[in-house]
Each structure stands twice: as structure tokens, then as C-alpha cells.
Length: 123
Image 1: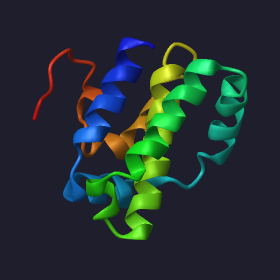
Image 2 (image 1 turned 90 degrees about the horizontal axis):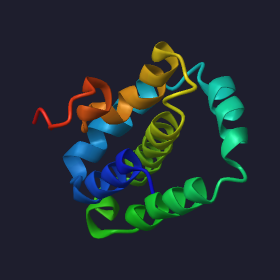
Image 3 (image 1 turned 120 degrees about the vertical axis):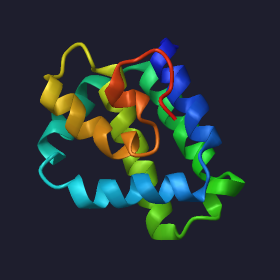
């Protein structure tokens, strides 16, 4: 598994309800217009075992205690934000900078390294 994918999954595991809520609210506020981007990029991932494994990891995390403490609406939006961030991380080399930022931006509200490009966290 790619280093950034592993890091994303590890840090999603550590998010508490407040972090999930920030990402969920940002995703709901900014998710419009990315459907075409998601479907185009997502088609490349359909046959990718790493994608399926990482996406399964997101769904397993969403069943965890801290994720279940969030409201269902926030949890569903946070899962969507996590999936978008996963897609952005996995397709970073093929996405334009603007597309990467649109996909990773909502989850970057809680995991700023997604947009910073820095090796170390800023929080």
C-alpha cells in the first residue's frame, strides 16, 4: 500500500467526532460539481486491488466507536470526504492541482497534510 494511502487510513482511524464533523461540513459545502471528476477518476480504480482494500478500510473505520458517535448525516458525509481524499491521494499524479484540491480539500479541514504537501503534520 502506498505510503500516503496508509497514512490517510491511519489518521482517519484517529479522528474523533469533532474532526469528522469538520470534514463532513466541508464536504457538504463543497461537494457540488465534483461528480464528473469522481466518476472519471473512479473508473480507473474499479479494477485496482489497492483501491478496494483502502476503501474497505474506510468502511471498517466508519463502523468504529468514534465514527458512530457522529450523527448519521455527518458520518455519511465524512465517509464521502474520506473516499474523495483517498481518490485524490491515489490519483495525485494524474489529477490537476485544482482537481486534487477539490477532492482532498474537505478532509484537509481535519487532516491538513493532505493539502500542505509537507512531511510533518501542522496540527
